Length: 146
Image (cartoon, rainbow, N blue to C red; front, side, top):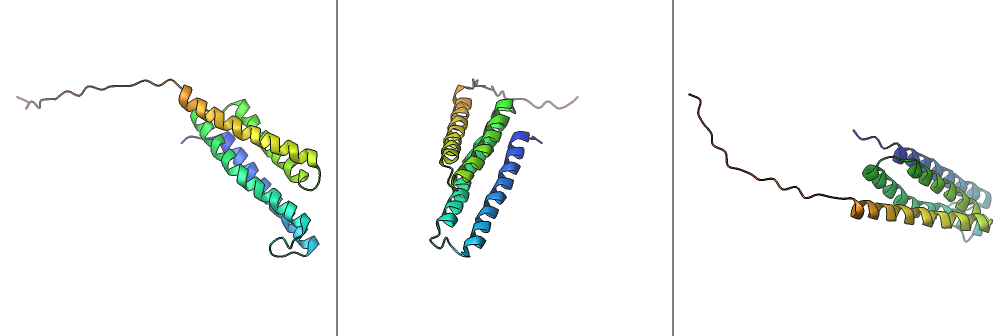
């Protein structure tokens, strides 16, 4: 069985971050008394978009992280990439509450992480040397024992 510690750890962190973002939406819903939809309330809309944007991006990052780790193995730069992604998403969520520098930083780092993982995946596929193996099959004879 292949263990992928980076992918598993970052996916667990991503799940916990998803719960935190959902709780933030719920908290604002309660404060603003909006039980369904966004009610046209800007605070609810901002929190919902922060959560939705997280979900939209995280699927791609986790898939790429998993496949890169599977193909190239675990490495410190892959650990750092996953951790930096999660921190960027926290910045983005806080930024959606009005701290525009945090939102911009979170967005930029998210895009850089996705692009970096995508480029790494492509390079791994197209720059990994491969060899063509040919096997010659010969006909065999069955000889009865004497």
